Image 1 (cartoon, rainbow, N blue to C red):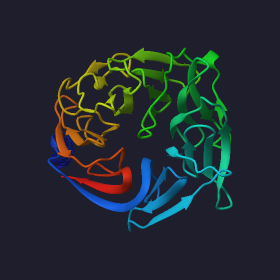
Image 2: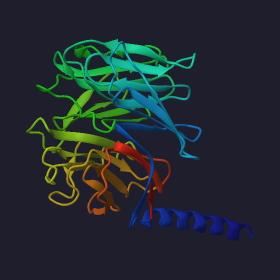
Image 3: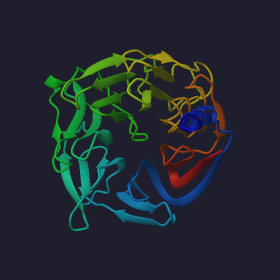
Length: 343
């Protein structure tokens, strides 16, 4: 009897694994849950069944994912309505970061108001993406200034942020930065972080930002409108980058690549094939690294074989995407936030 039970458990586990690996999507159902005149490029699924967002015109808010009820507020700085394109969270706070001068980083305060925890004023300042390793340590990246990328890090739960000196970073290429398109320029796992740039480079740290190295990918970056727009990793080895040229979105060569060695080397995938320009790519959870969704204003594309082949599931336009589980995601774009259910 004991041997039979062991066999049965192993069979069930193997069957579940096989089902996950063989699961494929044929369609996506799109349910719009909020519309506005805003441009949504940063969303974050929070603990407790909520999703936070931040947008242009100083707007930020919360979506109750159980009821789809939306609460929106506005954050002003003097007479400025900041444009927020990066959000993040730890277990206690929500953070949002604006682009351009002045760069403004806010966290939820103890008195019910957003609290300004970092400000940077410079003609060249432009921040693009932000995330957290854990409750204490977080990172944000911006365009290069004085010869290196702008990288700020917190190690006290987001209360204070410090900019890394260029002496501790690789020298950037002229005009190198990141695209503030979907808040997916940074991916963190354990102590690691990968940052994707406009010049087709991936910056890597294995010790939470104390040391860095940079690798050139084959993603096209000859023009200022080209480069890597999004990066994701399924585990410490398997990663993908996506991009192209947002002014010539028909280009489908040199716009997507994959790594199987943690970002040391990259090779192009589906080169010259669908999909063309996309601003956000995400691995589907629990897919063994096989399934990917790439979205942008050219629609929603899906791969079931780690990026070798793709099919277009929808032509509807979005900028950014976050999965809640392995069949449900939330997407945001120009004027709306939507729930995506994959079948």
